[in-house]
Image (cartoon, rainbow, N blue to C red):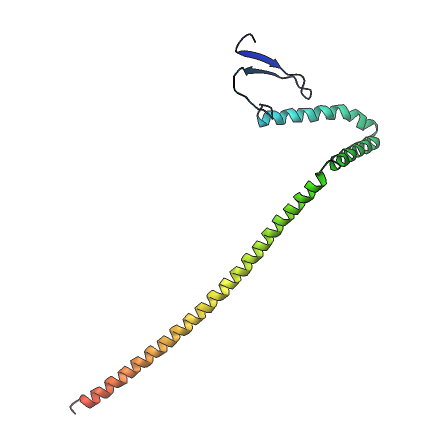
Length: 163
């Protein structure tokens, strides 16, 4: 290497020529995804899709029915090849059961919460009714005590008054 920096020319990646400058360092950098940002990668993918559309458009215009049939057969073959892979069906089944279990759990939790809220509301209503009955009992007892005290006072005043 001539200097601390070197130019790394990448080969055509999906029809796009790239040139990157990388600094030489002693650190290990694992890059699974290209260093480009999300917007840059999205632009690259859109350019690729547009380029593939330009290539397939004349064929589609020439024979739309045949083109569609070949495309469907190709994707069906790719899908069946994917499903025939080891443990793919088991993994997909497990994923479906997991999603169904989570959804079921959420629904049951919501129903349990609603039932619990109804029970709490019923208990609160019952306590309120008991409290109202208790207050009414106390008020009637207090009013009878007042009337009793008033009668006692009246009797006392009659007995004690010098008439």
